[in-house]
Length: 145
Image 1 (cartoon, rainbow, N blue to C red):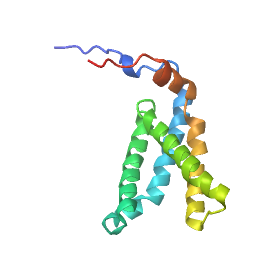
Image 2 (image 1 turned 90 degrees about the vertical axis):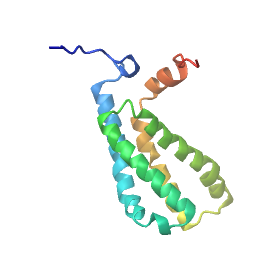
Image 3 (image 1 turned 90 degrees about the horizontal axis):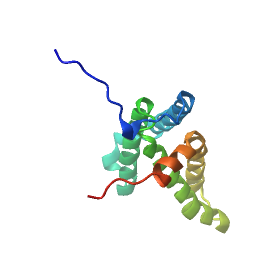
Image 4 (image 1 turned 60 degrees about the horizontal axis):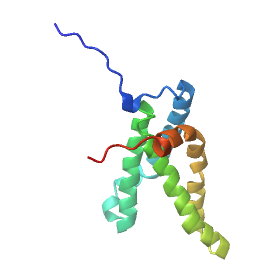
């Protein structure tokens, strides 16, 4: 009879993150996932009849919601999903919303997207930025060959 030995996974060992911090990340994943279920999943049934890029965005964000729910189980492994959520919204707010606001050219549709993207502050609050800096900016990268 074979006995199984547990071998720790160095790539995903996270002694730096407390259980509280991981649960805080789970709140972010849940917020993202539920929000996208409410807003995007109903559109998925009609994605083929949407304008091209609206259909693309609907499918992309539906996939993101599924990964967000997977983040409930694996909050550290799915951290790039939270980072992606932060980065794309900050870019959009910076290069689309801010110039429109400064030009006084914000219509109702743009205003709605600005509001939705502004909710990224919740995700920004739950991301463990010290850990992100250590793991993604300061750590040695993977081998190239």
